[in-house]
Image 1 (cartoon, helix red, strand yellow):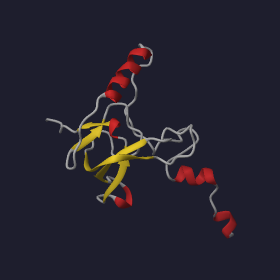
Image 2: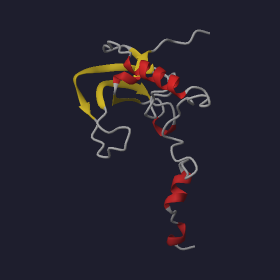
Image 3: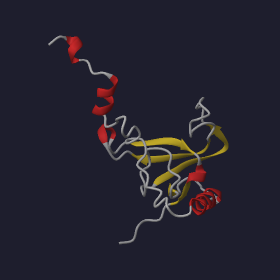
Image 4: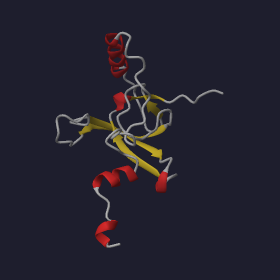
Length: 143
């Protein structure tokens, strides 16, 4: 078999890492479903708006987690805590150039630290910038 026959096309590569045309965002967001959309979508929108409006005065060392339905990044995982490393006095604006992207000009005002829970970087402590409006204080689950 020649080297050319060993090459994978883009669809093969995407399938190899778990993405496909059927579910292109499978690895990007593992968020909880919105729920039954046969109910009142206006009530669901108002609920999300109210969650969005709820602000917290985070400080370095605080543990946080996503607000329900407001996760827009792969990490941290739903229910997984992250630690506030820094609260920025002036938000950094996401530089996504496409106005159709949900990251377009998102104000990133906190730096979160977290452990990666899978793959070759499992257990590595990394940090990223986020919009604090998407987070709430983390409360450990009681068993």
